[in-house]
Length: 296
Image (cartoon, rainbow, N blue to C red; front, side, top):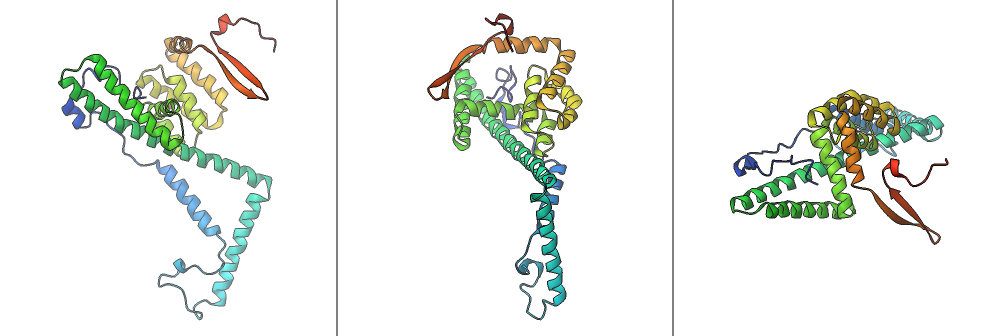
């Protein structure tokens, strides 16, 4: 869970004084400007389109108006606003184009929400990693063995995963996997995380980019991000994945071999219920060794 946050070798070279002076720097910048602008535009548009049953108190600085202040012109103005709001509703909910726009906007809203959640998870994991690093440094100063230091880190990871799982209603394993993804975006693909927070790309696109660049060093991952991120806005996940994979193989041919070697360690046979007294049996194994021929 912390492997995206603490590079190999950092534990051995740890220094308590450096830790206390923020060895691991957590970005503290706010959401992207385009996110704030888009959110403000939505809020203003919805406020302007709201149907008022009566004149709201907030439009008058000194409180509710007296009857003689609310003139016929005021009433006409609010009736026009109600008509505009109804026209907007009719366009969005009673036409297919409006429905599609609502779907697009909802997806962007979901992406912004997911981006905010992932940033929060990554920053939480970073804070817990810093605490774990301090505990490791203190244990090392007391002469703890390498195995004991690793046990301290594992216990901290398990505790952080359990905390996240409890608030997100996920198993600790699922919470750890999602935290790894969040931390990878924060530390290795910051522009991808910003694009997700802005609602420009979906979480699935962000995950494709993260998974395909996991075996690259930070500099090469940033290069792939610069080259490919714009394409994510107008591609399907499958075509985007193929494009990123091709760029990764061009940049670092060894990365594909690393992915295959890691995938081999995850080969397995599993069974899951399918309902109606049936079950699915799934095999994950190297394609070259499949025991049957495809007929489809």
